[in-house]
Image (tube, rainbow, N blue to C red; front, side):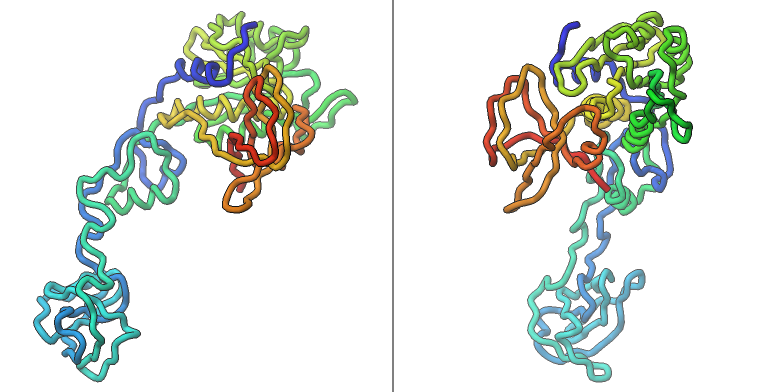
Length: 396
């Protein structure tokens, strides 16, 4: 099998993916969805000159001194008349500044006595938010390809949007194979283990914005694997296990029996070398992941997450951060190594501590890691304090 680098393998996979069609949905239901349009402001925000503080609105040239109180401006209920020399208006945060006023004296600095208020000197523009200070009408606030989170939803709402156009969610079917796999709460036999890979991958897929279905584990029988793959209704079928070339690794053979056009046969990566990808004659894509949980999870971060992003119309390239090594590392072998690591902050920067044991079967290590540390193929030894690339694994 021809080994492809991680970057080339991901590029070959992404070349087979097109963003799914779009639908218009209610903004309140858009969390996690990817915009298929730009969101543009329909008016200035704020739409009027507003007060940044509770206090008194007046003309700066009338300060310092005593001013006559002529009214009030509150949020949603402005003072509609123009302010004249020697006058002041009680004003609250967010309320419109009356015409003629150019400064706000905060309430702590003013002394009210009946219908007059005494204020100190104040420069024009003090404590005032200009109209359009946040954004202007017709300004593009959110661009297509952005994933909606609560902050972006707030911005779209402030622009007057009740509906947004977003890409459909891809359908992902997860198929795990192996005689040794059983699902809890079933009682495993003496040579069986619980299925830990597929449930975690299903949670990842859902969190990355796709609709997920997890099929029952499939026995190591070619006909059974063929039928499972044939019946998986999805845009992307993800298999877990059976991706290698051993006597009991039947996923490739089953996929080829269904007419798989192989685009990536194997990846020059550790862990996860058996990972493969191709297209089926009916248009479905198939990503084959290794059975060892850590291998499957690493390759899910490197390949599955970008594939889902591409279906959604979002940026598909992983974003790497820089960190300094907490300990020296020896030279790397011929395969690119993505090491599970623990991050900490020191002197304003990230420190990466790779776990001592990187065995691909250790789920406890992955559960504690919050980053994958990238070591390029053939990398020379690195000293403590050297800069390395890390892929962040967000933890709640």
